[in-house]
Image (tube, rainbow, N blue to C red; front, side, top):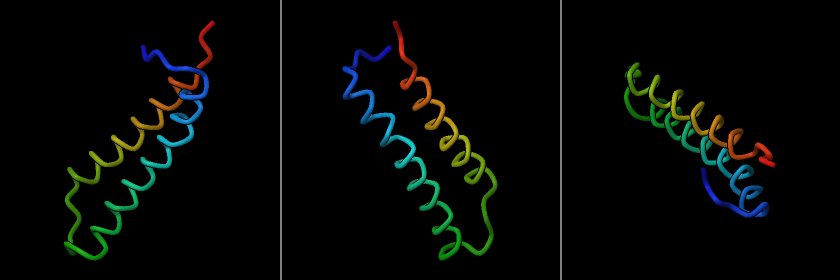
Length: 65
């Protein structure tokens, strides 16, 4: 597991979901202005990475005794 101070853990938990949302938004905007047809593997990979980042933030947020 990561060896983080409580302050580092708080910043990480705060910023990881923001980064995941920015990446998901970039994928949506890319499809809106780029290709007229969405590539399903790319959409599924983006959603999986978004969900994985949120789960990572939750795991880091756990208070270990």
